[in-house]
Length: 258
Image (cartoon, rainbow, N blue to C red):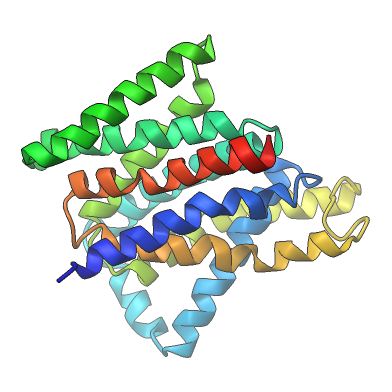
């Protein structure tokens, strides 16, 4: 029987693999503005889920647990950096380099699992890791220069996975804290762009811009799946399954968005 955590991880990585198609439709909105709306709408999405389940009181009481705020503030900074690099790269046509970043990330996750949690890999698990490492090295060498975008994505998300593996709260509570911490700077930036008239969203309205409305759902849902998966399976398994996303991103970038 397949572990529930494995199913959650596969679902999260599949969604992250196909989402470049979605974000590419919003290329006319700047990376900073898009990340602001992404944070705002993600926070509203998880807040509505909390209210629907009448879990606000439990959520508030969970904030007093030792280490909670430090853990999730760290996670929020890492995922915020990851989102910003990712959206900018997609909108700037660095699709292939983003896929390289997410090919590197699983290797980092496996290394962190081996070092931090003393996890062990079976021989059958070492084979795909080795093949992926060789493929990643080949891609990096043929790229012709240091892949800063790929490294930024890999480091930010690799350590985000490590933090989520050790996180004490459930996925919904954790994501609410993460997006809540990022909410103030996001709102400040959105207000500044609206007042200055530099905002793209709702300034020159087009049908595609209404896709922004769903940014909270498409951001929050795979993150909730990932946060649910991380405590249930080893970090090494997280790393191996993660190859689903960059493989899909590479294929989309090569055959559809290039």
